[in-house]
Image (cartoon, rainbow, N blue to C red; front, side):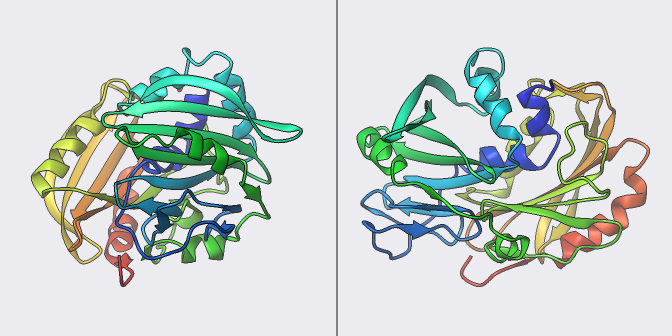
Length: 327
């Protein structure tokens, strides 16, 4: 059975899974009633003080708290559940690679006859909690909160209100995104994730754990970035992270455009991803900061000998991206 790292890293899902910890600015809204989260199968009663967000699938608070939902294919549930039984092998390194410390995994009662795996983590000045649910998809309900605010009891109470319905259609998932995009052949739409990110691929698989297909992942991150220089520095560290890649290197860095914005375009390569069989890849990464200070990012990954032929399509997709009003 493939590892959890291999499963997540074989698709756009890892980036989405980890990006769901970001936060955005709040809108008006009322707590205390069951609310459906657009583009997902999840409804829940949000914690008091949390309001709907246009930037993520979920809710945010004035103090930087966030309630988000990430959905993965149903087959991911057994992988994650098994990994939770021995977290030091895969989950601890997975979270640590993103600066998160896994503190505890417990079984949380959410009804008279049901319990869920419940994860407690910390990242810098934030506490984080994650509830794992199994419906028609694998569902993470994720909460982050400043350490200065004790919300653990409220988080556990909220988990008991989670209701899972039918999966959102691809159209609903795409409509929940804060941006629009036009696919360019040979790329096709694969799936939108968490009202946050979109995957495009070449091939017939929406789940590609062996990493054989070319992929494009587009995300519009809710968390503000202070400057292009800070964004570029973060990207350079991420793209060559030895905890994620073997022999990764950046081969060029040049000016470009994405979503009508000035961008930095990185090009590089790596021999393999950690936790996966060797498969040399080349990549492009487009990065820009919107007028609201949010990062729009697009990564393109393909086998080393296949990327050049895909560059014109990738460039057309980058130029077609349009950030929706209010975002």
